[in-house]
Amino acid sequence: RLRGKLLVIYAAADENVPFQQAFELFAALAKANKPYDTLIMPDSPHYGGRQPYGVMRTLRYFAQNLGGPR
Picture 1 (cartoon, rainbow, N blue to C red):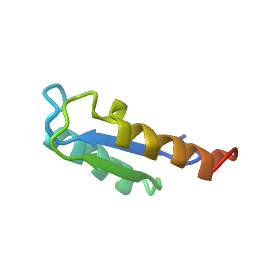
Picture 2 (cartoon, one colour; picture 1 turned 60 degrees about the horizontal axis):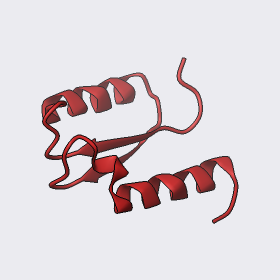
Picture 3 (cartoon, rainbow, N blue to C red; picture 1 turned 30 degrees about the vertical axis):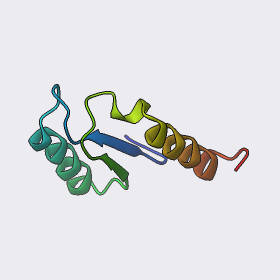
């Protein structure tokens, strides 16, 4: 029942979520024909999306897809 835009951020050096599990999520979304966008943060730990580049990309994604300042 997923609707709307989805940004999946994966930190490549994540200690909590192995890369294989991330690819299982990507595969499940593709199998269900659910569109999604992906940001992979190389050499980042689990909180990689909170690093400056991840925050900037998340804010940009929200602005582009939900409206607001650009």
